[in-house]
Image (cartoon, rainbow, N blue to C red):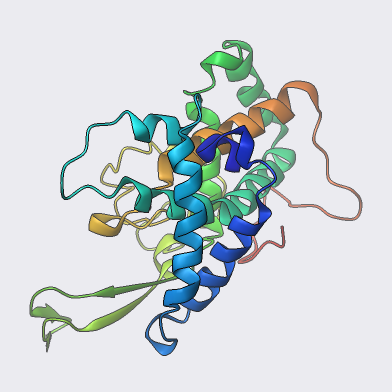
Length: 254
């Protein structure tokens, strides 16, 4: 991930990732934990030194050549892309687990890979749908904080503006009343284009605070799965199994 975003020279920069992990750990407490200004300054200093190098072939190199305005903050798009890769690994391995339980779907994915060489892996709709579906079944961000911008009528009661909300993603993403395959692995139902069926689901959240790392995560998890499936038969080590005929478990330990 560091090589893709910042370049080969950042490959062994574990210190940068560790600083971000500490900041993220505090941020997960939202309003209950004070901001860590000094820690954030140290992180920004390291990050900006990598971005200033603008290594060719990295996203940092693209950032350096992208036109900006006074309102632009391209460096602030990098931290979300970084911390998205912990849950990205979880999503990729859970998608792999589903493909191991559904050999026919794994073969469909291999056919998609065979039709493209490595340079064409930017567009792997089958594997992209598998990752999205794994995030729908087992969201890596199960609870989402939001705040209303206007007064809202909800179930007959009025909520004032600036009301804090806690959205429980699994409650929505496995709602049997509105999803025909709430507890099944059915990637063909996911078109990934925020169609009428998809808009209710929030694996990458949405709206003004949509995850900036969404496309990067889907690109690289798809490429990772393609690399594994192209040369490997994936099977569960006994006694582990996921029966495709039964409703899927609510959680899955990666």
